[in-house]
Image (cartoon, rainbow, N blue to C red; front, top):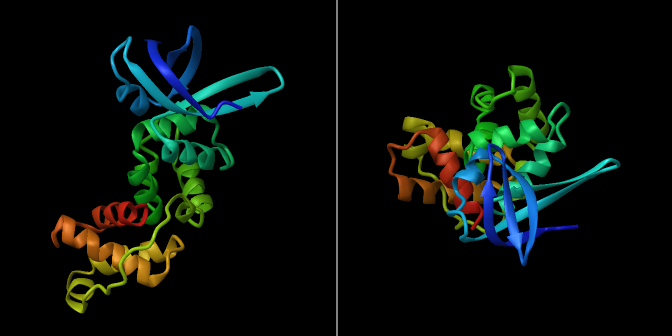
Length: 203
């Protein structure tokens, strides 16, 4: 199976790119977000690849990195989500934003992607809410959100609760939100704290 392609960008289309690897052109389907991040034609490029094998076809899907590819795999495990819908979601929401939407149970955010209705969005949230933490690893500093932060405004407490619901230990969740508050300031809303907290946990 092909797991990575490293070569030169040969050409692009609406939802694909051709990567020239030592004279062999690989046709790779990509999300709009990945396509937008590609260099100019003729420039070096590296893509994480998911090889999709069926009886009558072999397709390659390219991603900006391993995290986006892991999300693609997770999305395909959800009933009713095929490759086209998974790419549409990843083209609309960055991995951190998608993780935050799932943590907040924000189906409207997920449903922004073309081809994703409220029912599919809810199914994605229901089926992935317990699996998101598998995409992040690492130890956050053990620190507690202060009573003023968690109680007076509630956003930090909500962010900690969301991260705990995603499977992180309370100490990890607290440490990540403390770091998020330090980096983003106490004016950050819950969604922003979750996004920043997930980034801390992924380090």
